[in-house]
Length: 335
Ligand code: PEP
Ligand code: MN
View (tube, protein in one colour):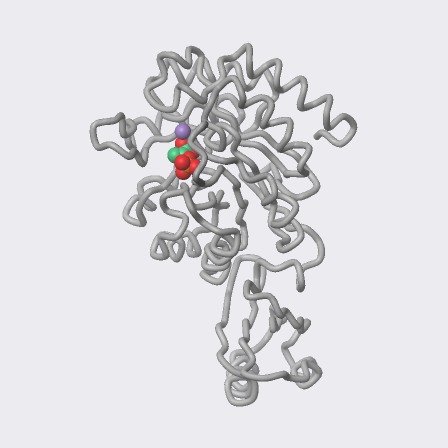
């Protein structure tokens, strides 16, 4: 059960309601976000929600019999709209591309890629400064200095920054330079990091774990929401299976499933999802067909020279062709 509280609820009303709920319903957690105030209750047994509706300070009461409460579609029927920066919003009703290199490598690389993407009309540029790499000998990113020039160049060109955070200790230094924090597949169940993202007033792009179930992804989103941040984008990026023909298996079943279960926007990352450059455009089109709300695509001027994930990265020309195809597939719905 979710009790949506009125903004003007007094602390006295809140306290008495909280004790009433604890005594008569079950466990309760108070959640405060920038957008609202909620009591999430896990009833011990069936409970008549009309007993709550009459309390002062209550805006609405919802019965949510999903395991995931705040991220569930059961109480929030209309899709969430996520404000990024001042002028951009992401929701199930709008479609956006996040494009850019796997890693930030140099000012020249960022400048050339940003200029290209801006010309294409892209508004969200990705680039990793802190890279989670399987091998400690692989390129692990330029760190904060790279993120700083990335932010400057991307913002100068009127776009916004998407970049991955690996650890809560990086939050303060990264905060001024990031518009959407990415939580990568390897950290999808890093609960301390999820808690930390709950305290942030910027959106989070949450990727599915390498072997993560959709339930686990929704639980991870629930951590962030219940920690105080409603602005979450779910991202399918492929999972590990017995198939070894390509890097991962892009699970497009996830898109309709997540959109039915949750009010949050759902993105797909076909670059990591299949991991094979020549197949990425096909899987992007398939992802659009599956009804996703946006895509994340890796782009590099010379993918063969990319310091990470070159095998799955499109060059400018490939991206340009794909983008035209995506636009014509979405036709009048594109914005
Ligand atoms: C990335 O986006 O570059 C990345 C590391 O993705 P994932 O966490 O999905 O592997
Ligand atoms: Mn990558």
